[in-house]
Amino acid sequence: MKFVSTMALGVALAVGGVALVGVAPAVAKEKKAEAPKARNYNLSKPVRESAAASQKALEAGDTAGAITAAQAAKAAATTPDDKLISSQLLYAAAAKANDQAKISEGIDGMIASGVADPAQLSQLYAAQGKIAYQAKDMAKAAQALDMAIKSGTTDPDVYALLVDAKARAGKPAEAIALLQTGIDKQRAAGQKVPSEWYQRGIAIAYGAKLPDETERLTQQWLVDYPSPTNWRDAIITYRDLHKVDSDTDLDMLRLLRTAKGLKGERDYYEYAEAVYLKFPGEGKAVINEGVAAGMVKLAPGSNFKMMSDASNSRSAADKADLASATKAAKASANGKSAAATADSYLGYGEYAPAIELYNVALQKGGVDANVINTRLGMALAKAGRKDEAKAAFAKVTGSRAGLAKYWTIYLDNPTA
Image (cartoon, rainbow, N blue to C red; front, side, top):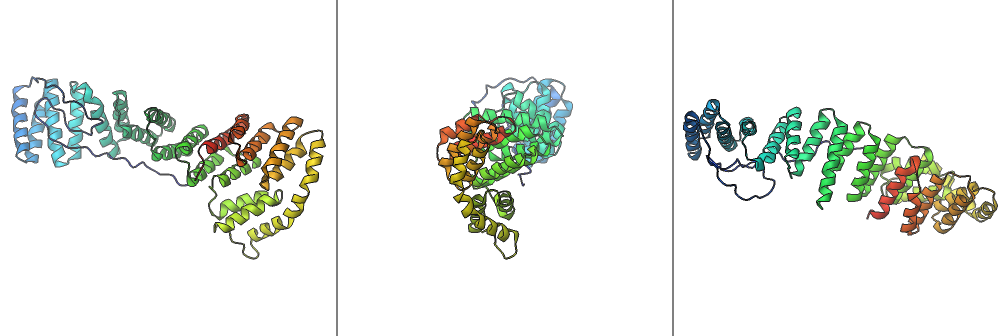
């Protein structure tokens, strides 16, 4: 399964003019704010002289001279105001020269001065973290991006980059917990979460073998992006991490088929192999769908041809036996034969008798209620009885609860 390995996130800084006093550098803005009130800065004489030279050089287009003078001011700085203004000037000159190392140095200096405008600290930390991330300094990136969040950033990229930085630092559980916080904030703000966030989170959780986190993220992803391809990726990921039994595996293939998520010869082969003998009507239907989709070829001597021939030859007699099987199931002392006959009806797409017999099976007992409620929910869903289907899935517990949740998500978010 292929997931996006990294998120497409911009880390470039917006560059603008910087005045000597009173105006902070034009780092990436989170939102348009009112112009800050000018404040007076108490600069030492060496810093004031070098700062003036730096600004004069910058205005003349001499970025190299502006950087040199700003660095001289920074070297002479002794007070917090000295450090802030010299770092602002270094940032401004480096930004004009597109010198990322010195841009970073300027931002670091503004933060370290301790007197940067508190309203702009989140922007400074965000910029610091993005540059460190771009330079692959993940420890510095994680620290700065975390401070940006604590300072109240509204930049969604900060969450995404910090998640990736933590994952690259070998902290997948922390990365997923942070991503979930970002997802929750996006949703609370009425904003759609980028698909890339889910994809990266799923890749991290899957790679770290975190089944619960993977399940939760795939389910949230499907609510926002319920495409057939996403359904296939989500279900296959779930199956890989949970090592489900054969019955649950079959019901997941049935969900994939319903969500139009079967793709390629392998998917159809796995499904057909699981049902062509036990449920020949279902096997026949699945193989025919694969042929129609161009995914299956019935070449002479192939396994597909063998399964197709077997399901075709068995389905007529099997279907003809359903009436007597139904009568016997209703007279049986327990619900096992009712459940088996309902399964056959489900495979033939005859949902009304399947629903009736699943209810008989539940009433008589002697069956796994979680399996029966899963398949009752499937039959009700196929019959267009959405609310009843959701009620059946809500009764499913244990190892099938995840599957029931996926089915419920599909009912509310069907693929086109």
